[in-house]
Image (cartoon, rainbow, N blue to C red; front, side, top):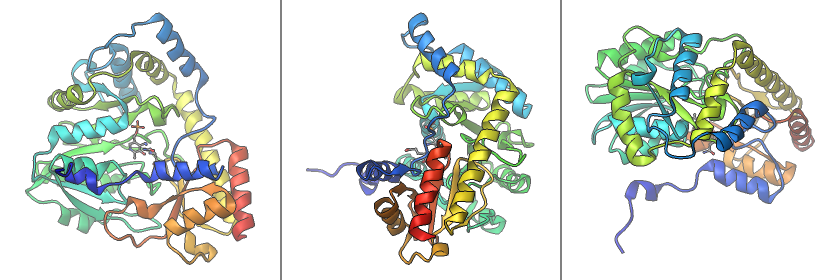
Length: 385
Ligand code: PMP
Ligand code: GLN
């Protein structure tokens, strides 16, 4: 038989599915795959149930429900001072994943270069390659993960179509600084390129740190696609409701990819997300503060178990240096070891590298009930402490 698509044939199952299956097999506490437990806002879920019974269950507009698009525009004005025309500058898609895929397909022509930052979130490279793009990888180094501006500049050329990056950044837990964003903006403008900004963790920047969308920087309004996700903002990862904010010409192009890939997103979930985005500032502040407290709880527990924990400025992940507890193998060995010996699951950071990783780090998710975080770190302490 002829071989199937060569790009997809090179990729296996995602590390998230693999580690979750292993966690289930060993009945382990799953701090691996990033999904929140016990944080789902009940009134938003009730609103979706209500909408299922009381609103339309047929195809909504392929751009998304007007109520949600208006809510996205209002949210971006409230938090970032961004003035969007909801009818031409917002679009609803089925999760951040589809939004990123549709944005990449919308912009990339075969041979175009795409700048990405490593460690790289798992969906980026396969889609870039399926679209015929050529990744240009800029590697960050732990534990600070500063963006190396000289290497960033060297990754750009006249062939650069776009840069794709994620801030707050999974898995490094880094929040890009204003200076780093200025450097990115300068290069995007200089090379007449675009930026796709994965901002699904926008409400998970801690310690009073501001999340700054690149689209708000001078010259970036026409060149940037900003991606958000209800999965992260409302701790409802199963819903797969994502949204983008961008200039009209970009929205018109992305919606073409959306219409051929997915077309529409479940209307009752959109309706409930519109309700959620309409919540007052306190709601979002409480969410951020609650997650920050969980971060501190997990970091404290991991430190008591003997780990050197890398700084965590955002997202709901923390990384530990596995050498700090004297572990000899690589981070994949470590994650297999702790599932079997401590019944705790994590994600090896090497899974986020296209080339050979220099890191030996494991990522733990803290969007979990406090009791689960405490039990997980108690088990790790028994194993390593
Ligand atoms: N980007 C990053 C960096 C993520 O961690 C996630 C969450 N899984 C997504 C995109 C995708 O979000 P969604 O679940 O809305 O598709
Ligand atoms: N974004 C989540 C993580 O980093 C997982 C999403 C998925 O399982 N595909 O853990």
